[in-house]
Amino acid sequence: MDDSLDVFAVHGVGGILGTLAVAGLATPMLGGAGWAEGMDAASQLGVQATGVLAVCAWSAVASAAILLVCRFTTGLRASPEAIEDGLDVSAHGERAYPG
Image (cartoon, rainbow, N blue to C red; front, side, top):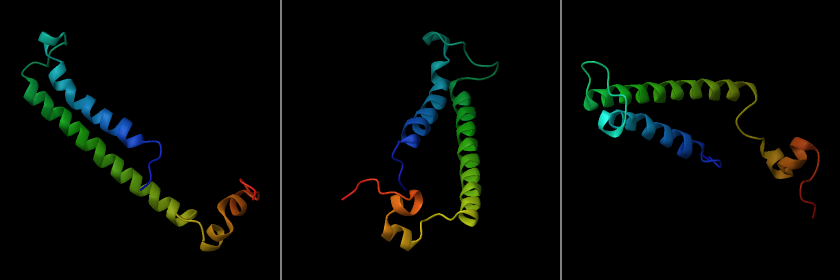
């Protein structure tokens, strides 16, 4: 899979780490607001981890649905002929780099 913009590396990993770090950074000793009544850092980490897992599951299901819609409407790959001709010519009707 090609992720040329590093979307998952930046937003996915950063979001997961930030969400899990909330459990420890909420401690009043570090200037945080503290936890809800009856909660401590470990129980808050469990809540945060549950949220991360729920978002990951939702993202996987939604991505699979989008993939299936694209597969059956427009296809996932260019035809071999279009690839052989060059996608700039077959998709846009012009050559990007003459020569």
